[in-house]
Image (cartoon, rainbow, N blue to C red):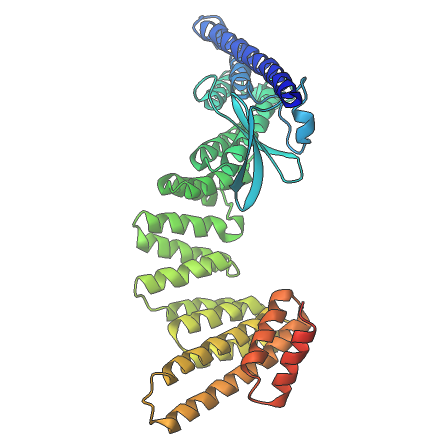
Length: 432
């Protein structure tokens, strides 16, 4: 019986919250109706205030159902009677590898972290279609009428800042729930709004492009990242990487390669650019040794950059040149003996090579013991060297994963020498 009473009370709270949001939606619609009349009035349509008011009316419409919501606020506070009231239902959902509680209401869904904090939300219906886009158009018209109003504090800049704040929130929410195309549109709206007051909001532009890529709208993504590069915002190379990716998806492979190469010359440390270059060269059966030329050029400029030698090793490995792979890693360790990544990568390549030899040895005829034993000796040398490298890597930067990898290698090498058996026993005794 007590549960029924609580549910009845919850329903009353939800009805109250619904009534409040409905009232805001109705008020926003009325404001837009009055604005429609004003912009059709010959005298009012040339007044900057008419268009600023229109922008605010559309922002009101875009936020009518969500204006009470505040990120990072405890959900317990948001569900009180004077806020949203209790939800109709709560269900767990997984987004981005995190499980949220989705609080379901008539007009909105609210997503709550495992810690009970409001993270993001979604309005399930629009009060007015494309409200934020129309708000931006209204402000653009206002600036046409009176540019000076957008250079000093006042109603115009206040309206711009309000639009940026609200549409950025909606953009983030759209992205978080996987509505990537909407996210791209709203982030781009924030970028354009910032431009009205002379600001270059490259982060909004970047997230707009990223959202379109996630939505697999590669044409829109291409346009956004081209715009970023045109205004000098390379985003540490990621603008080039994503532009090349979009071009490749659109079938313009030559332009994609050219973009990757341009990006690499500007941002040689960007692993995304390098990875894209390697993959597209191999996919197109182009000579990946051209990448080595680019790497060597970068190394000559930045002689102490270990990451460039790690990338060189990766390229040689893709080509299948083991000796040059090892030479690049030797150079990396020579430059920085404290590089955990260099030691770990070196060990990894040697273990991969040893596994390949084992696989080939197992294909030999059973009577070819001489060749088989010689190949196993090569395996032994590689594995023992890998153990030393892994030990050094762990000494430089201890981690549970690395420690467990050591334990596995000690186990594999336990028959080679007493020290490996002892190492394995030590690992077992101190297993993390």
